[in-house]
Image (tube, rainbow, N blue to C red; front, top):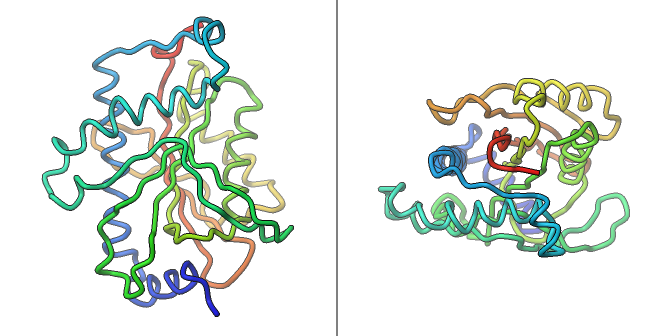
Length: 247
């Protein structure tokens, strides 16, 4: 018997070859994330890495994503989304769903940095699964950061998710060093994708404008390493944290 995610992807392609309501909803979520980032820049918060190390064993990357969720994504949605359905979207930090690795066939927990649910797109899905949108976050601060960023893309190509994950992914880069502008970061990621043996890339990171006040947004397209009709897109946001993160 086909899994709910498999049925969902077939229905999505059959009913809406261009994405329809689903793509529109994800695009609006990404625009909202950018708007929250721009609002954050106006508030000028600062996170000290040295102070952080002295007071907690928490991962600094998790601190950045968690504070973004708590201080902005959760608090501003009702004033931002005039549409009553969209302002019911739920942003959760550090959540988990199960997946099966398509290579090892072992079931494992899938840890998600920003977990987006209650997407209000049930009317497009006859089976009404519990679908969700996932956003992963990575710090960009040294050369190995690009390998870590690409490793997150590889994970998506190998994971058969138990619950219905949308055929769109989100990835946020917290850029902490000024030498890694969003253009440089994208160039380095694309160069690694170009030679990666296990990631099937249909389209490398290409600029996609979600917000008229922000240029660091991109889209890439890849294939899963299993199944049919297995194309998915990743929306990438390159957020400049050079004035937010301090030593």
